[in-house]
Length: 272
Image (cartoon, rainbow, N blue to C red; front, side, top):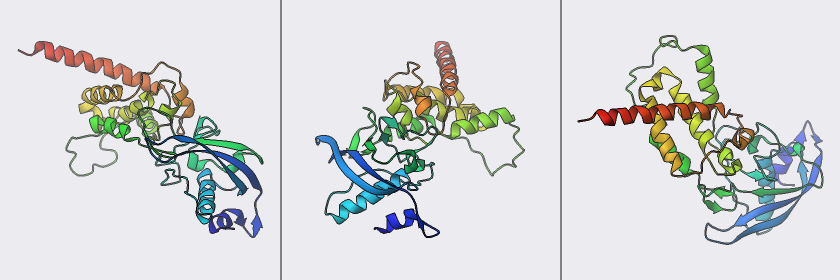
């Protein structure tokens, strides 16, 4: 038994229930190499392991056997960073609603299950290796306007700028987006409206983001349109989001975007 297995299966000296699983893992050496699903046996997996811990165990066994380990992304393993983006049995992040892959535990599966694990499938997220994709297209959207550039000076007192609670709560809900890309992977059109809308809303709803509100939404949406598909209201993005961000934010973004286009057109028409 490896150290990873030992740590995951022992609590108060008593082993947890284990599962014998069959994994079908997408293996691809690089973006231009052919890829295919590879069958990997995974016996003795503790139900207390997270999905990523299970992959760690599988990789330890593969390394010990002299095989190439499975490449996958992870970082915080606390459902915060969004790196652990996997398609599990055809569902972004797996079967549990409102749960990132790193928060998914093996008790969600049954003994003898076959689990298919694939990377995000989107033209905007080119594959790097195995289960790793390049999501830097999201960075292009943030660079276009996902920031506040005003000079704020020293930190103000918490109650100096009044913000209605409903507004602050809504902005906080939008800021919960971890940029994992599940919305894009789930969308039949590969659209990124939910991601962009969340990033727009958590700034535009607050007083600090108001001065650049319309410039921000126009720049971010125009950048998004050049990289991703169009939204056609399938709402698969909302269902797949591990933070359960509402598609209502897309409506808010669309409203601000139309206003931004009108304001800019009016400004241009008045120029000498």
